[in-house]
Length: 360
Length: 162
Image 1 (cartoon, each protein chain N blue to C red):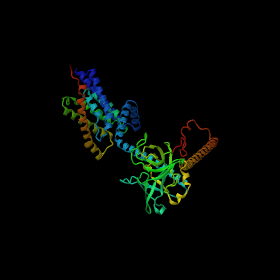
Image 2 (tube, rainbow over the protein chains, first blue to last red):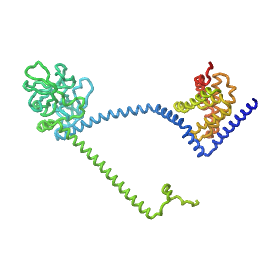
Image 3 (cartoon, chains in turn green, blue):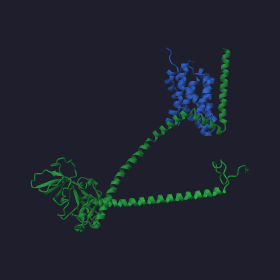
Image 4 (cartoon, rainbow over the protein chains, first blue to last red):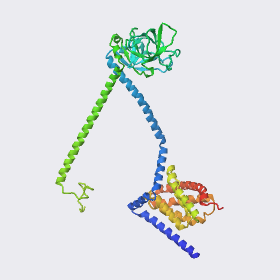
């Protein structure tokens, strides 16, 4: 019994001394040897533990960076929202540019500022005034059609009413001139045509002769009879007939061509332009203004595309020339050089390296 | 020690090693909990000093494989701590929580002292700060966690006989 205990103690001592000796030995091993042993352990026994540790550390860093990631995501979303707004604005400006090209002269473009206060729902402040030639009772238009009319003019700004204003009225006709009437803003929900959804921004075409029945979808334009608006500016399209008590004339509900919330840049027609008969032709084809804008955009795009193609072609030519040069150089070098050893291809000798066997 | 008890002890040891490589990096504290020291101490009191030294050496070598610059220091420190714990197990044989906590505290602190000394990287104020401030704090935290784990693992390590 005593011998067994003594033997066990001796084994313990031997193991302890051996372990301590090995541990001390590993501390004094050369670094490359230590790294080799550590690397071997990492690739075999410790590999699962290393993976676990990496995943835990990754989880911790993900947890710590979650706020930064969220704020980055928020800014990207915000920028994305701004991007769609800018795209819309760009589209509208291009359309306005197209309309300006069609009008050629006698107009000024302006920025339309909307006040958010009560009572300012139906008015626009324009960034042009009498200095730019703007006068009262001149039409305000957008590429889509009629926006309203200038009411008050200051030297550098002017105030315009939208077609939603209760005082707005415009002499109008169907695009085929088969029916005439006067357009007013549709201010009440009562008497809505059947099947027509409730909308805030609608117009009424009143006083249409009873014999002139208009179909849904008929385009309504200014007639030029009132003396304020020249003929041919789009107002909207017929949605349906309104049931009224008047038996001698028809009233139609009209979906406007211009939605007031979309108005940001407008064109003010100057008084001398109102006498120009060519205005009527500008909006006759609804696509004409758009097509002009599209031509401009396409021209810009094609220039950019042409430039990109040119630069790609130049880069390809340069690369091909370089490849041809290097091939020729290699061919001439290898013709002069003695045949290379098998290993020289794997380890190219730098020009400043002394030859093998040379002593410093 | 029966087969069942040995298997349970090995499982507890492996669980603590896993905790060392999962929970510790997840917490990322300045004074980390050393689950490996807890594992070695809990194993050492159940085996003979020679075996405890071997367990300590192997565990330390595994830990050192991730820090090649201090390769061997962990193995030496774990060997010393394991063997000493096994020899001193009679002292800590009493089933006292405070005593167990003290056991873990001293074990971790001793490990740090041997490790930092064998590593030979720290000098002067840095060494003193490590051994007199961060190591005791880490040892205290390890002791608290060790006691909690011991209470949780007690049914596994020392099952009640029917």
